[in-house]
Length: 487
Ligand code: ADP
Image (cartoon, rainbow, N blue to C red; front, side, top):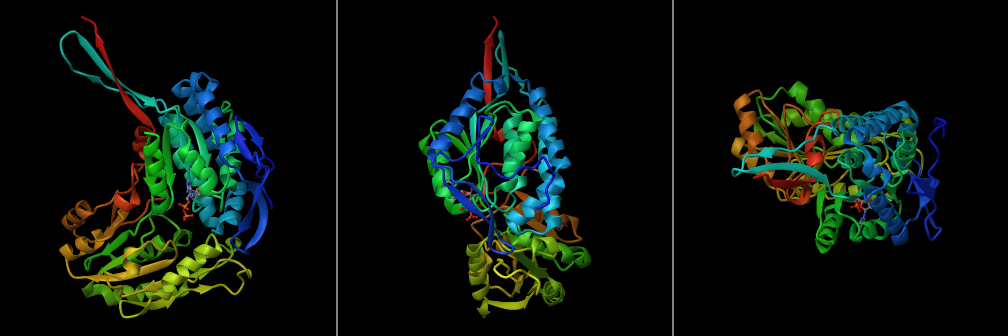
C-alpha cells in the first residue's frame, strides 16, 4: 500500500499513549471488502484492555496533564490534529477506501470532514461558557459547563475516520478523557488518526483506543463502571444494549441508530435539481449511511415522470473496486451483502417491484462484496421496504396524493433522522418541514457536505441526543449551577 511515511500500520490498542497488543495476545484479521481478502490485522481487545484504557483516561482526567490544560490549549491540540489529518489526507483516504470498500473520492471527502471536526471543535473549545442568573438579593448565580470525566465512544464501520472526529473532538474540546472502541470491520483510520494524535502532542490518557469485537470489547466498555458518559453510533439492537448498560451505571448516553429517511418530491418541485440529489442520497457510500435518503415519496401527478428519470440514472450506476472511483464500491462485508440482497429479493410482486438495477463492473475483483443498486416501486406503505432500514443502495419509491398524505407517510416509520422536501412553494416547504418528526430537515436539498456545524441526531428508533455543531459540546458536558450568597 502506498501510504505516507508517517502513517504506520495498525499496532494494537492505544492506552496511555502507548501502543500495546491485546492482553490475551490475539488478533482479528482485517478484510478488504473490495476482494474479500485479509490484508492486515488488529488487536482483539477484551475487558482487560478496556479496563486499562479506562484507568488511563481516569488518570488523565483526575490530575493528569490533560486535566491541567486550559480550554485554549485543548483547542490548539485539536486543531493541530486536524492539520495533521489534512497533511496526511491522501494516505488516510487510501487506507479508508481499502478498509471499507468505498470509492476513493468518498474516502477523500471523508478525510476533509474528519479534519474539519478537529478544526471546528478546536476553535470552539474556549467559546463555550456559562450564564449568570438573576436571583434573590444578596446572591450571585452562575452556571458552568463541566466535562463528564471519562467518556466511552463506540462507532460503526461506515465512516470510521469521520465518526472518530465527530464523537471524540467535541468530547475532548470539553475536557473529557476518552476511550474509543471502533468497529472491528473497519478501524484502520481511527488507529492511524490516534497515532497522529500522539504526534500532535495529546497528553497521556486523553485519547485511548481499544479495538476488538463488539460483544466483547464494546460490551466491556459500555458496562465499565469507570465510564461517566457513553456515545454510540450503530444499530438499534445494540443501541438498546448500550442504553441498558448506561442505565445500570446511572450514566447518560447519546445514541445515533440509523433511519428510513424520506425525500419528499412535490409536483411543483424543481425536478432537474432534485433528481441527482434523490439518487445521490441513497448511493453515497453504497447506501451505508445512517442518514441515507432511502424512501422517495413522490406526488402521484409526477410519479411516472420522476420514476422514469430515476430509472435512467439507476440503470447507469456501477459498483466497482474502490480504486476505480465508480458510483459506489463494495459493501462492507459478506453479511451486509446478504442482508441487502435479501431485501432486494423481497421486491418480487405487488407491494414492491424492481424498476431497475444498476450493475457491478466486470472488472470488480472476485470475492468482493458488490451489490448492484436497486430502484424499487411502487412500494406499499406497509411493505418492509417502506419501513425497515436496508443500509444498502436500495431506493423505495412511494406515491402520495397531497401534503397531508406526504406528512403522514413520511412520519409513518419507527425511525426519525433526516428528511428532504422538494417544492417551489416556500409556505409548503416550511409547513411540511415543521411537521417532520426527525432531527434534521433539508428544504430543496439533502445532506450538506459533512455538515459539521449542523446539529444532527434522531428521534425514536433513530436514537436520541445531538451530535455535530455546538449541540455536541453541550452533550459532552453537564451544567453546574454555582449559587453564591455574598450577603
Ligand atoms: P452493524 O450491525 O452496523 O455492524 P453494530 O451496532 O453491530 O452495527 O456495531 C456498531 C458498533 O457497536 C461497532 O463498534 C460494534 O463493534 C459495536 N458493538 C456490537 N455489539 C456490541 C455490544 N453488544 N456491546 C457494545 N458494542 C457493540
